[in-house]
Image 1 (cartoon, helix red, strand yellow):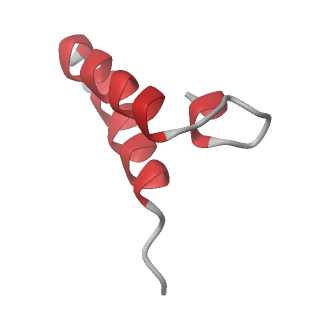
Image 2 (image 1 turned 135 degrees about the horizontal axis):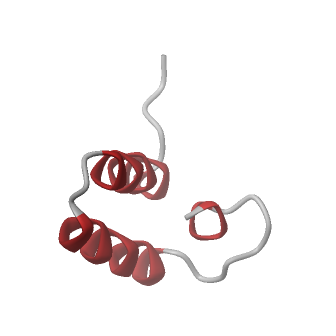
Image 3 (image 1 turned 120 degrees about the horizontal axis):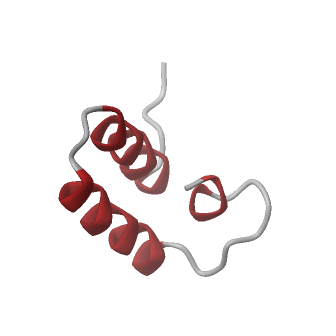
Length: 49
């Protein structure tokens, strides 16, 4: 099974942080996604966040 790209991995950890109530960590992960993704087009990791 191939590894997901970095954006997808960060999104998965962001979702986990939210599930665990770790809002501060989630905020940092969202900023990382904003830096990694060029835009928030539908279907992108940033749009999913």
